[in-house]
Length: 184
Image (cartoon, rainbow, N blue to C red; front, side, top):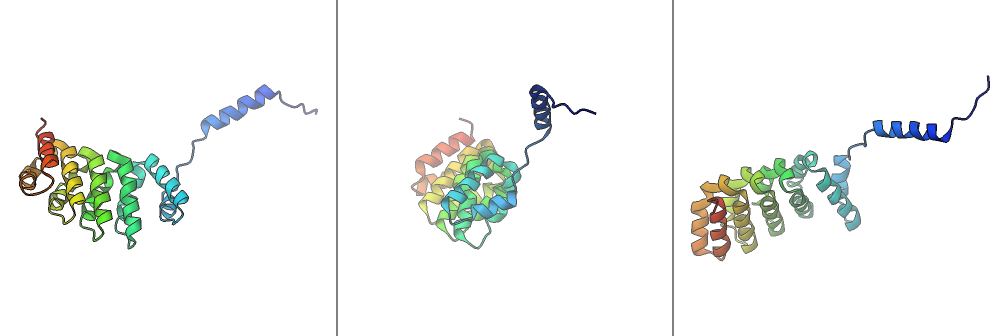
């Protein structure tokens, strides 16, 4: 029997057929979370971008990460969830809990993430209302914005926003949030 080499076109077609059938593997969320904790900004930055692109499959694990002992890790998790926007919905309750964190930077990042989530942050409304009384002005500002971005589902927050608009430096954003919630 004589073996003849296959023509290059046939080999190329076989290679393309195989490539089309193979599905790219999903990123390893656990590995990306470890990289996110890295002190090397390049490593953690690349992990952040990959987790943001991944979206929903990583949101729950990032929510768990919000309870980490290291405040830098908690803040990084919240900032990564900010990048996900509504796709981070599974972490909304954990972000609500993070609004009570002892570290101001974590509370601000959590409120920012909830604001960027829009209506998907509905689960955090009670925590956002509580955050309207936070000792830090930035936390209050972002909590107001988050309630406004949730929209009509946050109608129960209107009395707290009205109070905040009278007694706090968040007057204008609170008035704007009330208008958004009322659909005006």
